[in-house]
Length: 75
Image 1 (cartoon, rainbow, N blue to C red):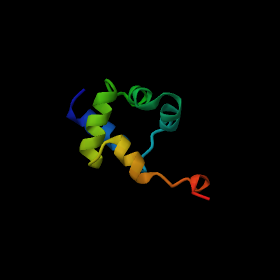
Image 2 (cartoon, rainbow, N blue to C red):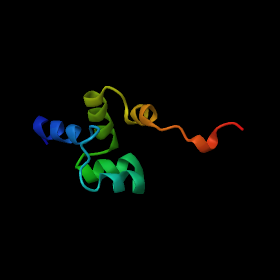
Image 3 (cartoon, one colour):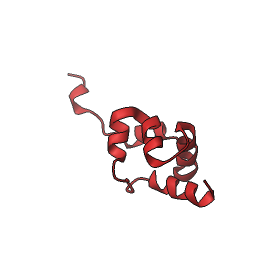
Image 4 (cartoon, rainbow, N blue to C red):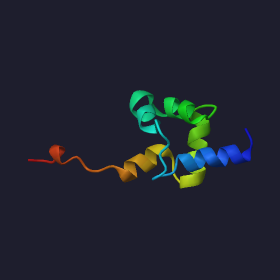
């Protein structure tokens, strides 16, 4: 796949641009499944392109976007 394909895939991984079925890929099998669903050659390829596009790894992005769970607050 050429550079244009990689750019399209990386754009699909950007926040607010969720391809159909992407949520199921994350919920059902993690980044490896999501990478396959989006047409990446593997999880490492997805992570590399995501990091280059967004500026942080997917795990760091998820942590930065996480909503605190109020049910776990100290009593």
